[in-house]
Amino acid sequence: MNEFSLKDILGEAYDMEFSQYDKPPKHRFSLKHRKNMKRIFALENAGPQFSGKARLNRRTACVLAAVIFLAVVSITAVAGVVSFIEKRNNDNTELFATDFGGCPDTLENLYYLSGIGDNYVLQESNINEIIAADYLYLDSQTGKKILFEQYVKSRYNQHFDNEHNNDLEYINFDGQEAYYKGSDEYSVFIWDNGDYIFAISGNLTKTEIAELAKTLKMKNN
Amino acid sequence: MISTALALLETDEQRNVLSEFYQKYKNRFYAIAYSKLHGKAAAEDAVQEAFLRIVDKPENFFKIEHNKRVAYADVIVRNVAIDMFNKNNAHKIEELTEDVSDEAYTLGLEDTVTGSVSKNELLAFILKLPVLQRDILNLKVVFELSNSEIAQKLNVSETVVRQRLFQARKSISSFLESGDIHE
Image (cartoon, rainbow over all chains, first blue to last red; front, side):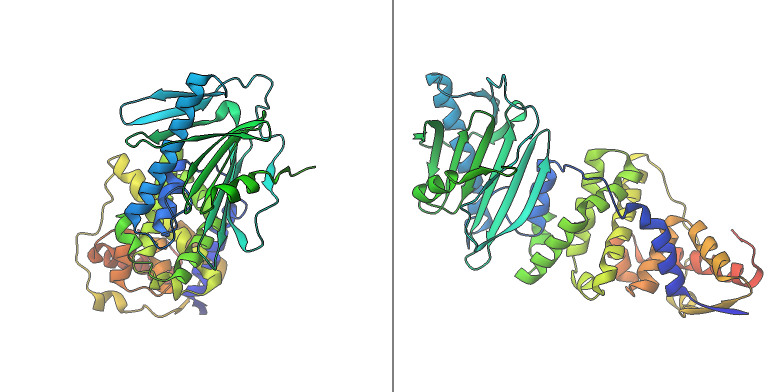
């Protein structure tokens, strides 16, 4: 008669069965899934959160951020100054870029913000070469977050809640067209460097976020 | 459901540990779910549902040794995916009609088992057990969850848990005695 530990045998069976998943292919999770997972872990709702605020406030913050995009698009569409177009639906506005002739159709070059302070630690990153890259940084001391996103222009397409109105400020950002909306607590900064669409959002002032945007650098340079 | 889960992860440490754990293995969990569901959205939903079940009573997760947590999550993700597949395809799993008491089941529940078969033969036999039985065995024997905890994680009744455990044990016992597979 032989003696076995059922626990050990089950462990071995598990190893044999699941070893095929040890090196899984990278999957680009949908925005919906990413948002829901962040909510499960009580992190945030698809963007930097207002520290210490109730959940409703964080949602409101996201709505505000979305409205900023809408306002940017509205103004640019009228003025014809930058390459964004908005399409209004019943309860949201779809935003996408135009005029991307000659722009890379993949993330041939990845960018980063050299000016993000050492107190911020990269908490999450998602890179899909044909769509976008995003990097979420957290200052664990203050709970402040910075979200940096780089989009392929031809794939830039987002839906935003359009139930609120917000003012918007156009900025000549070192010769590049940029838009800012925010308060002392929360800011969003969006610009088009000619090749890609970039966005920074977080608990930063206007000066801080614009200075941070100036530190954009190409990774492989 | 999500807002319910939010209330259950009460400490920053728990949130960070679970979030980092998810980030590290999310592609693995997605691949497991996808292998059962063959659909991107469904596989993502399965991973999300599995984590909702994990954060509901998170103490089950945190009491598991670090190197075994991924196995625990794997089992739950797979079960959720199978459950979703069965529901989507209106596939009913036949359970034993007999009620199996805890007392009856716990007979022979010891970790150490004996038999005339070799280790590899027993391993091969366990791999041939129905997945749902094998996963419940894992949760019970390896992760030492109670029947009610297993029922919560797999979204089944405790009766179903007892039945599947009983079936698995009965099959293993028969195999150990005779070396043959008894359905």
